[in-house]
Image 1 (cartoon, rainbow, N blue to C red):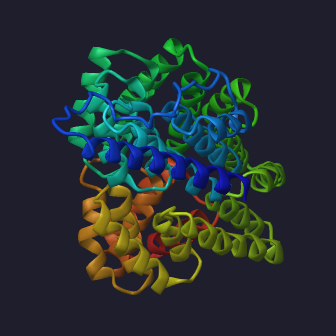
Image 2: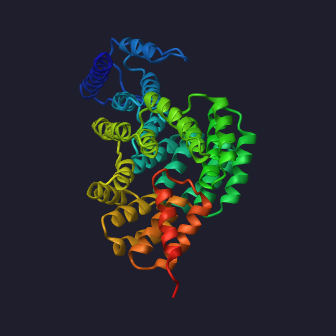
Image 3: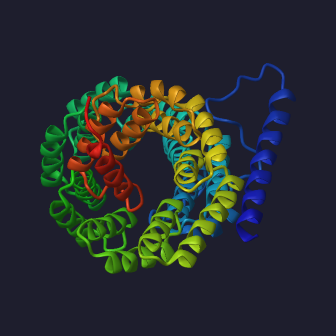
Length: 441
């Protein structure tokens, strides 16, 4: 309530200043407008917030200085960061209002607020919106590293890989950094060159100087190693990431996944349980539920799955698009109609290989393997190798009667990562064994 009141006060003062300015403008003959918006006569100079002010200080400051557009931008970014750290999506809405207030006061030369809007859109999984806002921020400050990296991330999420690669190369030529190398590595892996991605990530870890860059480089190393079935290397990389930040959710989740892959189910559950209690993101909660299922704790698993549905309601109420999270979860947990509806809705927004795979899998679990084939082919078009993708495609090929191809794909998936999923990997092994037991023609 306090934050809402502050925002209302700030918006009212901004509107009042604009109204008084318009009265002065239209009430004078031969008036030449100044370069900046006119101010009310009784307003003094804007005093900026202290450079290291936190959220409470910024709120108090903006009560007294509602025309400080930089203060509103900093408040918006701080609220967004706190919302991401605490998974409190009500803060996303508050962040959006603060950033909007900033842009109402200064819309032309306000790259901080524009970048904040891009960050907010990306956090809400609104990748087209993130790209638009990042482009606007770059029109003000073309060399801003964070806006450039956001633009690349948005292009990758949209499936516009060629554009993302060009942007990443241009940024690295202009401003070499660990951040640009991490993006180049991801694009190399998406293009089917995991070996090149591994080399690039090692370089990113070497040149990273800031805490966020080091954390992202080590976590990306762990993620790549995990997808490639190198569980020891994954555990080592995640340990390095936790040395940078012991509470980082992706590093902690990766550690739990590596522990499970190495056969340490009970320890993996403990890591995931601690993480899900602190950061109840649907991905982490659902993965904890899957581990409970493997452990035979079905009541505990069902409780985690219920949390995923609750999270979806809260997130949607605060503008967070959760279709991909829910589509994959629904497909793997017997909610075929929901999975298909959400995956198709996401496909209308973006054509990444991840979304194509989700549509293909939703069609498969809905009994529509023939319709799934084009989407499975699209998901494979870049040469990206992921055991889950390979498994999905194998099941679709099996569904249309191509058992030889299904056998090849299942073999490849399990060779790449024999523990790619707590629930699906054991099923893949059983199906492959059954296919291998059949006499060949």
